[in-house]
Length: 96
Image (cartoon, rainbow, N blue to C red; front, side, top):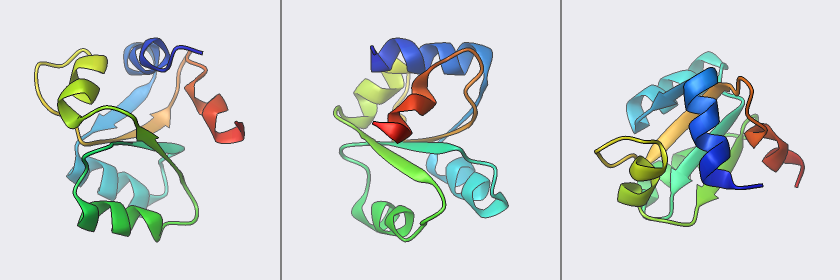
């Protein structure tokens, strides 16, 4: 599975929220199926995510700039929440 292609497909066909604040709100509301964080995500935010046992957190191997580019955005993205994957198979990472 090409992670970047699956991520772009999820953004295009599903419901994905970008940014730390939106992601935290989504977790709090219990809507997130999966969280993706950049490798250089701030440690305080990462610690908060690690305390969440009810949602799978995937660490993207690249920086927040690379994650933003993978999302097709011209800005940095350090965290995102996948609410609905749409036609993407990205949620299958939870089982891997």
